[in-house]
Amino acid sequence: MSDVTVVQPDVLFVAADRRAIISERGIEGPPTLAVEVLSPSSTPIDRERKLARYAQHGVPYYWVVDPAARSIETHVLAGGSYAPAGSLTTERAALPPLPDLQIDPADLWD
Image 1: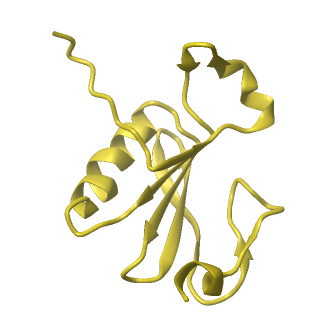
Image 2: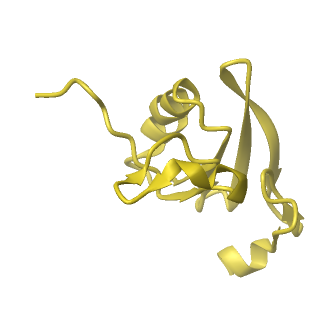
């Protein structure tokens, strides 16, 4: 039995400049972005355990999508832990690390 804990995000993104981590076996290294969509049963895991695990493994960006709050919180890895990097609530915005992707909350929640 392995003592490795596998943590899988709901969505992940690998930027073009990090394509080398993609092999025939899968993604062999931290993705650029991990996205978790909260549900009542997963909230403590996603906000605490997964946040810490992704930071430990060097995932540069972490988004928490909260359908109940109609928000997306973004975090950027800085010095081994995550710092807030913005959020999306009511206004169209681009979130790091995707400056060219404008997300309209009306498209997500309405």
